[in-house]
Length: 74
View 1 (cartoon, rainbow, N blue to C red):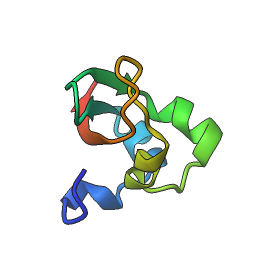
View 2 (cartoon, rainbow, N blue to C red):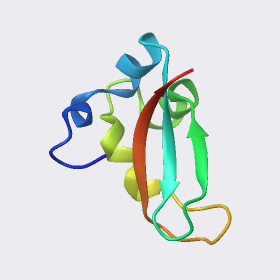
View 3 (cartoon, rainbow, N blue to C red):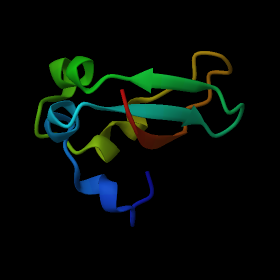
View 4 (cartoon, rainbow, N blue to C red):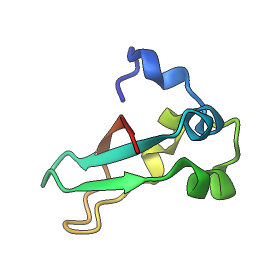
């Protein structure tokens, strides 16, 4: 999610209520992983903007620590 993206203001709670998921895409190997807001809320809290979880993401395949986030419907 880019800093200027209109979605960067959505919180994890808003995504969960809208029944949306986040898709993390590794910037190096393009591996994709679906992130469910309900699971993220347990760690980060309901009022955390989705963009704020990016520094905590790491690719499971190549280990790279940078990913793009996209919203998707379930």
